[in-house]
Length: 162
Image 1: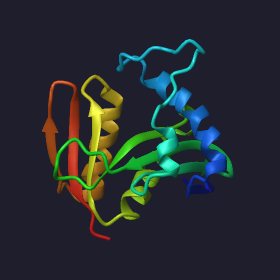
Image 2: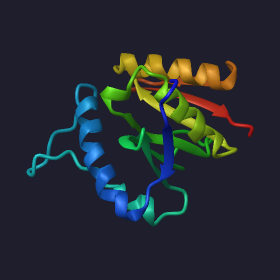
Image 3: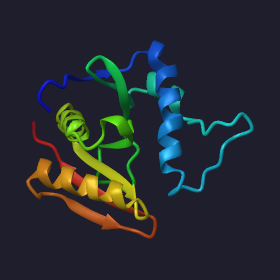
Image 4: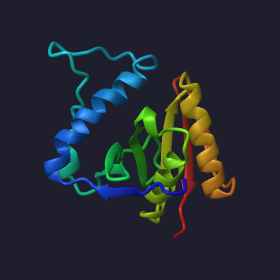
């Protein structure tokens, strides 16, 4: 990652359309694992996007690499179990920027911003996503995490101590 400048900034309301556009790419990537279809306008959409600028415990972030938009992260407090405080609801790095350590740096940075109990879920069918998050969480927590499996998802739970 020498020479790569990564910025992770809270997304302003003016950047909501940027995240909406990136969500289309993200949802396309996940379409092989999810049962969602395009709407009548040819978009996947994200019905909770507006909530990220009006609800207290939702946090939208834009990721830039060398001043170019490279992805986004959406954090909220809607966890699958009662033991979590926050979760990464959506995490997207454009393909051009993958496998360069950028996703790891972004995940570590986001976790470190909140001294709370985290949950993160990934589809059981998403082999590459499961491998990515297993490695990230294992390394970030020094193997101090819990896994809950259900029919559809693999849920990681862990505590951050900043």
